[in-house]
Each structure stands twice: as C-alpha cells, then as structure tokens.
Image (cartoon, one colour):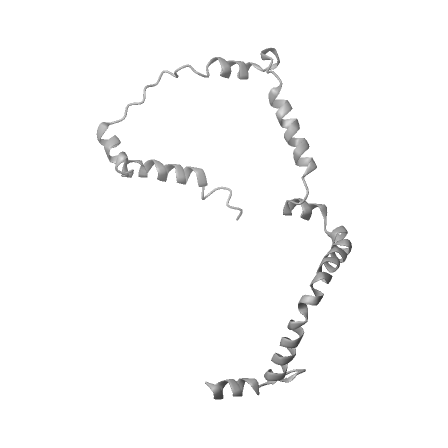
Length: 148
C-alpha cells in the first residue's frame, strides 16, 4: 500500500508539479480558510447587488421568490365572476331547457346482464372489445385528413 501512495504522490499535476506538492498547498490554504469566513457575507451581498437586477421577473416568479400579480388578479376576477348571480332571463332558450331537464330521467333504462356484470367486476372487459375497436376506427379516420 505504501508503494501505491508513493506512486500517486509522485504523479505529475499541472501548475504544482506533483500530487504531493498540490496536496500540501491545498491543506495549508484550507487551514487559513476559517479566518476568511466572515468575508463570505459581503461577497454574497455584493454578488446579489449586481446579479439580482439581471434576473428576470418570470424567473423570480418561477422560483417562487416573487408573487405573480397577474395570476392573483385573474384569480380574484374569477372568484368575483363566480359570485355573480345567474339571471335566467339573460340565458338563451337552449340553456334554459338544459336547466329544466338537468335532473329529469331521460326515459331509457339501462339493462345490464348479470353475467357481464360479474365478468366486469373480475376485470374481464372482453365484451367491450368490439365497441372499442369501432370507436377507435371511427375517431381516427385513417383515410381522411391524414395530410397526404
């Protein structure tokens, strides 16, 4: 092990010459670091003094440092809009009809086969595969509007 450390300490390092000299220099400088620790406060303050104005408003908002005044104004406007009462006289006929029929039954009764219901509770949806395939083909329309 000693021979490995002696080989590594003799390896060439730019500027210092060898790893051993670079290590000794770094250790001596690191020993003096605590006496310069208080200079970190003015360095950070000075850096912030010059860098902070260069940071854009969008960046400050995305970092969460500054509140987004536009989003807050839009939120207040949306809340005010929701508080306004709906006047039925201002609605068109289709909206009035939709409100009148909102909670009425539509006249059709859904009949579900108990065997199909049992299969679906077990996770077997094979009876719907044909419907899914039909919907898939109708919704994509491969032959139309493909841009070529």
